[in-house]
View 1 (cartoon, rainbow over the protein chains, first blue to last red):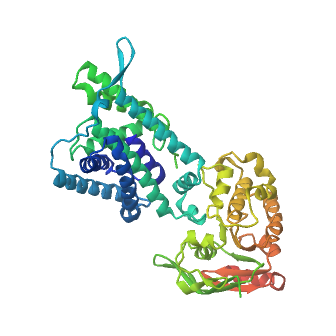
View 2 (view 1 turned 180 degrees about the vertical axis):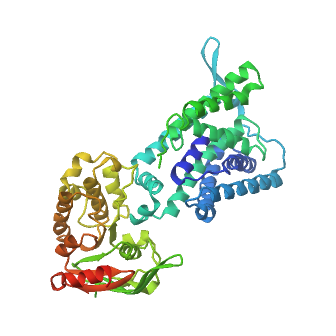
View 3 (view 1 turned 120 degrees about the horizontal axis):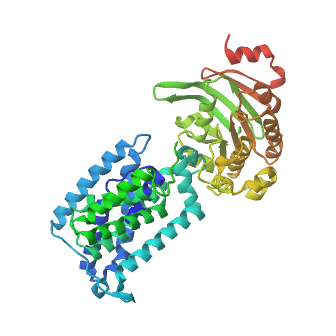
Length: 271
Length: 232
């Protein structure tokens, strides 16, 4: 789901967003603060986190990132890298380097017994279902609505899109805002499932990039498949030896790159 | 009051000046053609009108309102639509979605999806095909339909006949009277001089970013046009 946000940003704007990893951490911290202040359950904190991320994404894109977009991939890369460093240090300053987590109560460890010897954790299941739901919603939005057409048209050809009456700065900002809503959901789930601290963003970003590339650039369902492949590979690796967990994911990624350099479900055109 | 009035318009790409002090007027209901050689500034001229190339505030008046310096997205909402050179359909949208994009601003008027399909029946069975899978002629029809969906009062055509077979060009030009009968004024940029002269009420010739000739098609001699076109 986190990677899907990245896929949207790249798909619509051809923008490689290095800040993405830190934004998920930011979302987790926002959730933490919201929970501390209001005392609500992490799932309820989404009501605060999501609007925050939406506005944050819109403003970030409108005020900063739109000015970096152009024919060259390098400026957005550098600028998002810079924002990434700023965000990391800001979070470090505000919340210290301590590991944090969001406490969701008994849901964290509940599981459903499917059959003898096979149990599925409720939380991972919820996450999975939400991910599929969100991706389905986004896919529908892209394919069926006026806004979705505007997204695709602007992505195809920003100049001609302007002739249709589209303010491409606004459309890009909306795309970023939507992507950060996904990141917000992912951030809260991340906080519930594992510990987080201000410095883990970049490694999260790496996984997200791998998922996007395995799935094929710009394809949202492909990204989901990429995430699943990556996750399964990591778990198989962990079964063999705990030290293999991360490595197995990377190896799966490399294999896909060798066999299908464009990813499994590529949507990018060769122009 | 003229539909479109251009006063002393100059346009630049960076340091390069593409248009020099253009004066131009167009009345409502008129069909105007702009002809000229490659690089004469014809397409740039259209881009200034649609807002894709920056202009000074007072350079352009449309229905008595200054539109210089407005964004392209705002100008189309005022009723100026363009069929861009090379059609420029959106490749990831199908024909119908491309048409719908034209109506993005929601300007009300005569043109609806059904009316476009009536004008170009060939598009009906192609409605779910991606824009890029069409033949050149179908692409041009879709591009025209897309521009009409904006319900413009002024429709700009950039190189309508470029890269199309003569028979297709003829078919497309035959739809012009139908479009005009709905109260749309037409400004054509065209390299095909004969075609341009035969459909237009008045013609402007551009040469190296300046207006070199302006007159009624039937009063201009071949020699005059050729001199204005190529320079003498």
